[in-house]
Image 1 (tube, one colour):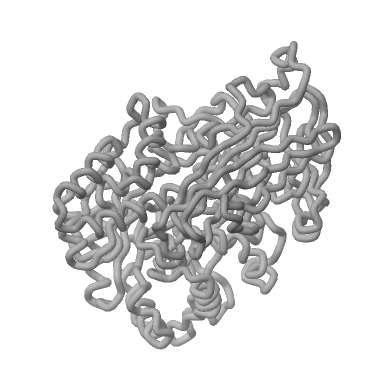
Image 2: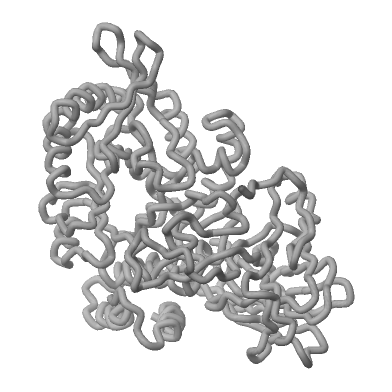
Length: 580
């Protein structure tokens, strides 16, 4: 098996060479790229005699082995609210090798000399293996002959990149507008340089008079499930050690910066029956004492929750699960020191015997920590029959605990009291039910997963699909969005996004050591759009004409099915937000 190597960044086929002190000092991983499984295709470069440096589109994943062929652009324009994070993409395409490629975004200057310093950054886009979503194949049964692709997604932190001959290298530009920026028009120079290459591009920025709140204050309910054990394995540290929490900091800080609202916690044995490359490590140790009573060690659970709260994440603590996918639990037998596995099917004596004492102890512990009011016992895609058993026991034994459910049975009407309800995209919640839940202060979101072809965040998905997700949420009046895997990394997430029978990229959206992706950056853009729409609707309350203009903009995006011209429609509608 290929393992993540404890080496400095090394050269390989079109691989970025990590020459910055930041990357080499911080990284113990091998960031080289794989070869293109479709071949390097040198014939496509016939007649190409000089490098191209141009602005491209953030809606396109540019192939590494193909020359840039669209019209070139030496300038690009961005527009945003104060506090907004914006993206642009530069493409360098060269028939000859370029050593030491680097990109620098200068300060933004207005016509009257006002400066916005250090608000732009450049990251090289790197390539990894992927495969396409196949709509005719059921979820969880991807065929072995699914074609392998090389796609652009990972955003590298290296200061320079060595380009091989006959390759294309995108560069992702991020601009973060300060909340105290003066409204107006600004321009920055973007320098793209390397051995034998020196090009200057112009990036203009229009800052509106509106302001987005800080991500921790966003209303959007983002719930991307965290996987701490994956960080320990991928970054080579013991699980739950001090080093593990240190390694998790960049990855979880990145999530907090997107406005994440939920801490993903586990109650017992791996609740999803090891559907990922890494099993979920226990956060709470259950011990059965010799007299038959129970003892629970919450040390890891507490440290994990406190860690995430310290990053600003903590509207809810969603704890999985009273209904693990195989209904297996385990505990340590104090008499023998051995672990015992127990099958605790809902409705059986074992279910009540195991969960009753735990819920009493857990409630008391949460109350002592001051976390009881934000904690939910969470269930994922469980049938109405077993949900009935779990909710009945909860309401009897621990009525103060909230409940969260990711529902793929269209059974949400049976649980009007559930605090955090999330429906599958193809089982939408009725608008009247959403309005009722809003009135009662309950959270209502939707999710996509391996059965959803569009919109989604696979490594083969169109980048704009990540934006569409939040426009669909806004059009349906959902509070936000859930995705089952923030960082459930496969064996080698840096080079190969495929895992098992899932479509490539289904199990994660960011990379080790806090590296972002095209998918994640575009997801944040969509979340910001949702926040803008929320603000505009609040301002338009009581003004039927203004509200109707907003609803008209949203109308096309009520569809969970791609329609002709959806990308162009999304671009135009996003631009229209700043004119309302």
